[in-house]
Length: 131
Image (cartoon, rainbow, N blue to C red; front, top):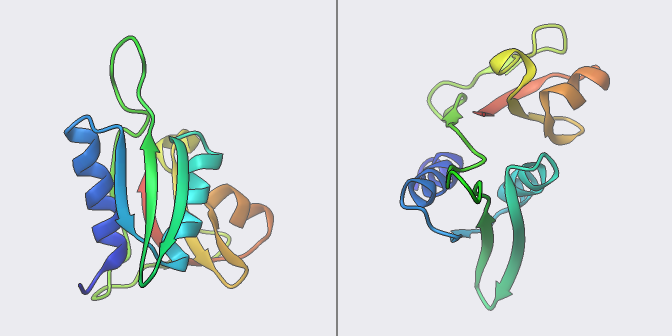
C-alpha cells in the first residue's frame, strides 16, 4: 500500500456509501489522530482502538441522521499525496466550505484541524478535506 491515508478515507467513503454502521481499518498513529479529530468534531459516533497481537485495528462507528439516513460526513477528499505533497503556512491555510467543513493538517505540533493550526500559528501538510 503506497498511500495509507487514501486507503483510510476510501474505506470510510465505501462504508458510508454501503450504509454500514461500523468500519474496521488497519491502525497507525496518524490514522488514530485523524479518527480522534473526526470524533471531536462530531463526524463519527464512536471509535475503538484494538491491539490484538500483530494486527492493530481501529473500529469506527459511523454517524447517520435517524430520520433521513444521511451520513454526517458528506465528502472526504485527499489533498496531499505521496507523489505531490501539499503544504500551507499559517497565513494560507485552506477553508473548507467557507468554514463549515474541516481540513486535517499534519504540523510540527501534531495532527490538527485548520482552525486549530491557525490559532497556534503553525502550518504543515494538508492531508484531507472533510465536509
